[in-house]
Length: 281
Image 1 (cartoon, rainbow, N blue to C red):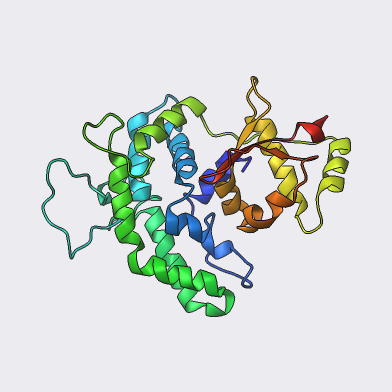
Image 2 (image 1 turned 45 degrees about the vertical axis):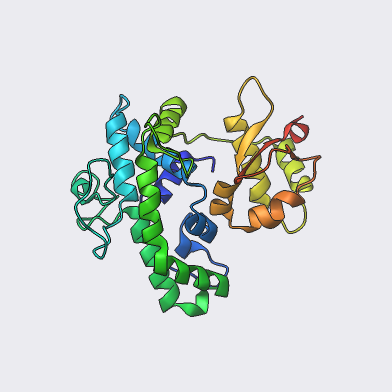
């Protein structure tokens, strides 16, 4: 979560489809099933992707970043319903971008995301001994209708911000993502180090059952993302779930006492705000 370049690689490089047991999340990559089934947390993912391609040639190239997003999101057309498109309709299959972004979309128009979902489902079917029952059930749902639903979302994402007579049924668009990417700038890989005193405080403050790296990551993320005019930082809970697993939001976050982390009341939609000033003092 702190190293944005590492996060970028997690969503652009091949995933290792393996697991040593039912608690091993390696085969799911940096996703939870809820993210894929309910399309949660994609604002951060797409913004990380956009920033990675927006600045990789020096000066910001918005159109290149937009093409990269299209390639990553690409999903082949449904042959059963495919037909001539009307002028106002958006494309959802971007095989033409394969040469420019071979890592993001193949020659058949299968983008990185669709390819990952397909391979996850294939792994779950082939290796039931290392896949939990809920994950196996989720993969069954993904196999049946995910690509159809993703096509709908991909059309919505492409609608311009100021398009007349449209309503954003899903509050995420490429225009918003690119605007955020321009404001946030190039991806960061900050080197965070804690003093021995703070390390000891973290050790003592971590509740039983919570992995030590959870609180360390929360504090590091806070230090990197805190703005000068506030002590609060927005916590992308869904993205932390993608990093640590659903135990982060279900168990570990609520287990941290207010003497360590203070969460605001504005919880919802997979985000909340928090501050850790007490442990830093």
